[in-house]
Image (cartoon, rainbow, N blue to C red; front, side):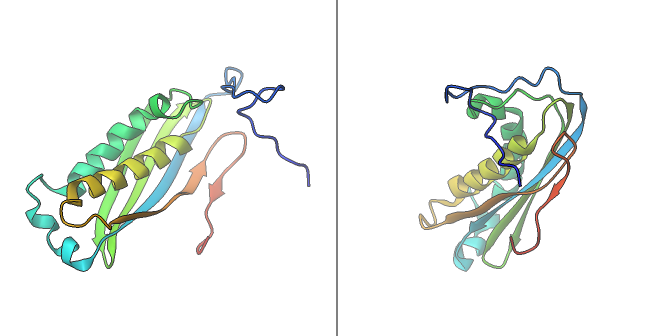
Length: 159
């Protein structure tokens, strides 16, 4: 098996933005996940949150975050996202977040989907921290990606 090389470093080892100008514009999508572990008593109080509905605010935060990803991640390219959305649902033990981002570009949208999931999770924390400082953000990961030179990726269950 050939060893892969990290692409964000030049020959001398300095951090470098990858040149994607020769890559073909293709449709690319990515889905990401995050989980916010919250005590049952705090989950029960979500509907009465005086700051507003934390789930809907987190969904909007995810969309905003995806559009700002290149401003937050130093070597990330500005990508014209063509679609971003998030589902933010309450379940036993916390709030599950899944995001999706799409583009027609020469580079993928994995970072946009991941940033969206992470910021949505941080938003849930922000809106509920008055009730419990022990809330945990867990399991931020890529679920799948499509398109691009490296091909499709789908996370295996349990990974």
